[in-house]
Length: 335
Image (cartoon, rainbow, N blue to C red):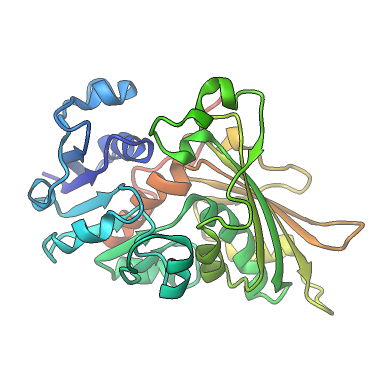
């Protein structure tokens, strides 16, 4: 028998992607999957692409999860902390929600409802020293999707002193699955198709997480809803540091030389979301604007892969002493 894992919140998009990855993982045994309103339904009835996965969704209760070696919490923001507190200390936990990402309680209060639950080890392995920290942790807070795409593009440049942390501008387009599976009028196909629309302009909840993870101190972030089911394309620009001569491509290449899921594309080839679909990879490209002199980095990920479920499995692998790539696709699906 392999390592026993369970998923709470398995009826959502991120939960469904977790189930898909876990069902094909060579070291994991998927022993439980739970939901709220969909409890009692076969997994395949909720996720038709998982037909053949013989599992019924249970109720999201501690007893349904306590026998696992590791539990993934794919619950709405604000719901993970209470459930995690009721799980045995011997059970490792990866939380895909926001409950334990932020160190600063004041930042939590500005963007989220409810009390601050405290910070866990941050689940972005590509940050300096973070692989070891995740491997030593029993509780890990997986990253937000926009935060992954932006931080991977930005953090090495700030750390190297190549750009100014106080002047960062990000415009990022995301597929509709990033908004969750609940029925919402503005996410109807007839509303989304053929349209681009900004939302939560100047007040998106991933801003404090991006600043915390990347080292940015001043960030203008505009998220855009795109007419596609999955993917994020983030365009990150920053003012170069005075007197700085570092080549942004060289900085990124050095930072991710040993990162199996982060790919700096050949010069002149730019990321696009379809190339990362179904994978746990991030594609990056960088240049310097010939007019403004600003550094530009474009990042593409699958918001349900590297932005959610794939990233969570990557962290779980490290926590359980496995190679971080185990059971995770590096390559996308095309067409």
